[in-house]
Amino acid sequence: MKEIKANMAGNIWKILINVGDEIEAEQEVVILESMKMEIPIEAEISGKVVEIKKNEGEFVNEGDVILTLE
Image (tube, rainbow, N blue to C red; front, side, top):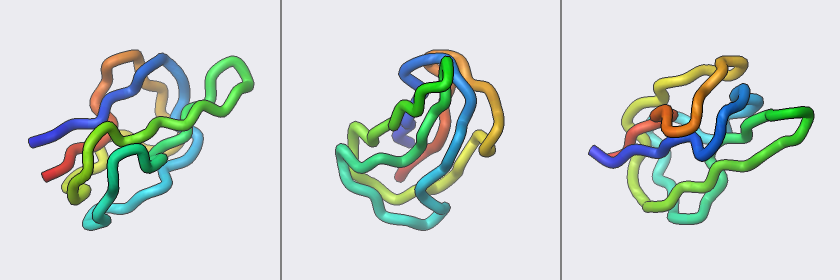
């Protein structure tokens, strides 16, 4: 199972994908909000979204798994 992790601490402001979506490497999948800035998280790998582990509004720490791919 492949994972996409938060690259910094912040709140999940917007989730841009859904379970079942096919995503490509470098596609924006989540936008974090930290210190009133919006920071996009891009997929490092391509794959199909299997599970979204965090919800909009949740706080994540650097390294937390946000979603998994197959």
